[in-house]
Structures are given as structure tokens and as C-alpha cells.
Image (spheres, rainbow, N blue to C red):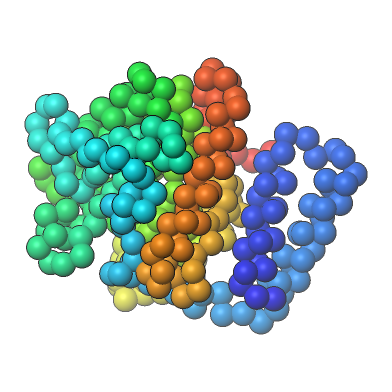
Length: 312
């Protein structure tokens, strides 16, 4: 069965599994049918570990579109906001206001660099505490004026340096998550490349969370996991196969709500096509969540994340 068929089945399974009631004969039958198809797929000979590692490589591809590349294609009248109103501006995080499909939204995302100088300037997309404070400032601005919030996640993780720890890195990540959980406006997040550890989760406590087809989302990088388990970062391929940070497995685990298809070969092949797919997914997600009242929306968001990892 082709990769597209696998993604389609996993996406439909995820949607059916999130329905509040599964007692209807038709729904239950469809769920069982899809599960049988997926089991048959998994029993077929496959190089799943190679496919997972391929997604890791594509998620890190240097020509993959970053947050500002999507902003350029999806938002009009973009105004970037700078500074955390306390210490400094963190270039690893971009945040601002723009018009998305004719309505004002707030957008926050990680930004990596294309060349050596920009990568150093952006700190490879690894945010300091100042970046999370800037993000919280824009989140609160969106909440105050009723703007839906969109977040784009692409980071190896929060910056682990000494200065960041001295300035309260862990506390800022926790406060950022708490701020997102309390928001009364619709929120949608998408992992567009790497979704690494707390640095990613800080922007992912949203009503709807998506991943691009070849993005990855995990508690630690494959290299970091390999270093801990095998004392050898070269075992990253083996670690990735064990961790399963790819979009399909994250959907199976209930960590995300859907997968955004990429152009054949990856998002780096056609930025415009990738942006169109992402934009349509985010537009539908915001419209769906907006149908709920603010209190109901916030309660559903909290219940969703508290249920993750819980067993029946």
C-alpha cells in the first residue's frame, strides 16, 4: 500500500477515535475496517525504520520553508513585534499580527537561518527565555483583542546554555504552556520541521495540533536519545526507529490531530504548494474551533492534553 494510503488511513482513524461516541454501528464498523487495513499494511514487508529516518532528514532539510517563508505566503499586512518588554528581543522566535483569509490573527513561530550568519543570529531556532516572554506577550495581545492564534513549530529544542538556565528557561517554558492553556481564543499549531522537547511543546498547547507529513515531534533528538541509551550519537538511526517521532506514529499516539500533506519529495521541493496545504488546514481548524464558546473551548483544550498518555 502506498505511503499516501497509509497517511489517509491514519488520518481517518485519528478523526474517528476523537469522536465522543463510538456506539453507532456505522461509525464502529468504519473504525474496525480501517484498523484491519492498517494491520494488513503493518504486516507487509517494509523498511519503516528507513522511512522514519528519511522523515528526520527531511524535517532538517536546509531548504525546507521556515516560519517567515510561510508568513510571506499566507498572511497579508504582516507586522512583526519585537522584544519581551523585560530584557531583550530573541530572534529565534518571530511573532506578530497579520491578516489570514481576510481576518486578523496572531502568529508565533520558531525561525532558523539559511546561512551561517543567520543561523548564528537566530540561534538555530533555539529560543532563550526572552523568546518565550515575547511569545506570551503576543498570546495575551491576541486574547485581549479576540484574534485567533496560530503557532508554527520548528526547533531542535529550547536553548540549553548557562545564561538561558540562569534566566529561568524551564520556568518560561512552563509559563508559556500555561498561558496557551488559558487562552479564550481559537488556537491552531503545526510542527513544520523539527518539534524538539519543551521548546516545541511551549507553542503546541493548542485546540488543534498538526504536523507536516515529514516533520518530527519528540521529547529528545534521535542523537540525544542515542547518546543516552547507547553512549553513541552515531546510533541516531536506531534511536529514531525506537522513538517513532514521525507524523504517522504521532497521530497514532494521539499527540496530534492531523497530518498536512507535503509535495512529493518534501516541502522543500515546492514552498508554494506546501504553504497552500498548510493554510487550508489551519483555516479549517480555526473555523471548526471557533464554533465553540470561549469557556467550552478552553475546557476542551485542557481535557485534551490531560487525557494524553492516560490509559483506560
